[in-house]
Image (cartoon, rainbow, N blue to C red):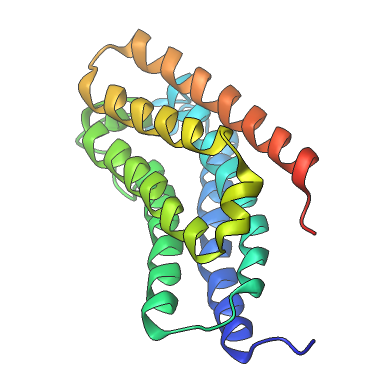
Length: 195
């Protein structure tokens, strides 16, 4: 079966955006390793969210192979998928802003600007519902009951992240999110594959 030229074009654009997302995260991590005291030092809260985002972007990129099964592309679907990818990039950029002077550290930045980060996390979670719908009913069935539970948990995490000002609460939330997301995607990968 010959590949759809629209999907081939979209795959290139997705690769560019998601490649920039991963580059942003890896470059940010490298700068923390190179100069750990710069920008307020490293933070467990920030590091967990960076790793959570890295796991999520890598697995999202993997699952976008399923877009090859879309039979009819429209410009609206094309824009939706590009917008969804761009929201992942925005999430990555929010973790590594260019200027931290008014915050002093990544942790303080994340805690003070939590509505932006967790709002984007909620948006990415909701956009995933549309992305899954594009891939068809069989994708919904394949994901099973764990998928709506996962969506609910991620929206709850986003809501709690916006509401709480406690550093200890945020650390616990970040650790839980990282462990949960990693476990969820490992279970999904090993039980479903790519077909």
